[in-house]
Image 1 (cartoon, rainbow, N blue to C red):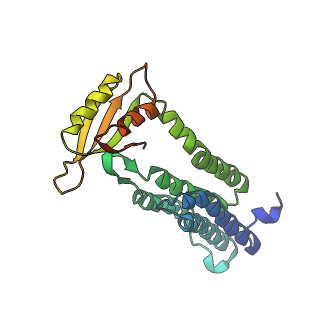
Image 2: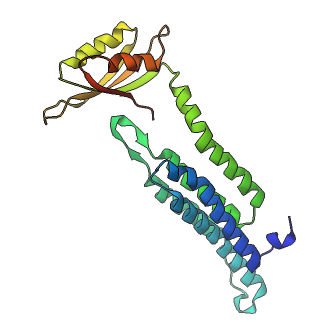
Image 3: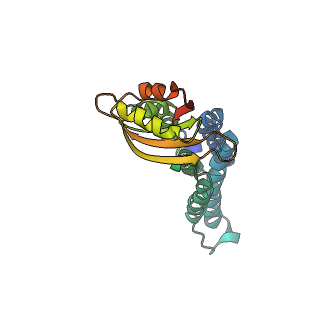
Length: 236
């Protein structure tokens, strides 16, 4: 690595900010395609701003050690990136929310923003190699492992299904049909009783049998019932 990239100069500052910009784009691109709450601009700004906090700390250190005007002034540069880590916690927490059916959404977005801020701090410090490796690992985790995680969850014996049906009395019929396959209905949460003119719906927590652990076949069974309007599996 050329020494000029490690030194604190105008060229190295521009390079570090550009590296932070590209890192934010790399991580935020996939999230933007999935139309997540935090899109590409959010990740880019987070990464560049975190990088800037480290550069400010380095600038203060440089001035206190080279400029006589700053002589005697003590500056703890570590506090600036540390404040970013604390502040990004509030920003990331704003992306976490409880969706319906007792599911939590936004955790990946929150941890993604936190990690992006850490990468930005590393960019500002000129830790290029680690930033590149960490960014690739994060992108691999978010983009490649996401469908793999869904596939693994679909193989588990625990299953949560949201069902919309024609009338309230049909909920018992649906539960009996599921139990006939060997599945156990652990809990039933009635979302809507249809009193407002809409169709009633419920969320069923199931424990599948060892002999018939297929999520797709069970979901197809429910969806094909005459009383059922729609059925979908909830995967958090």
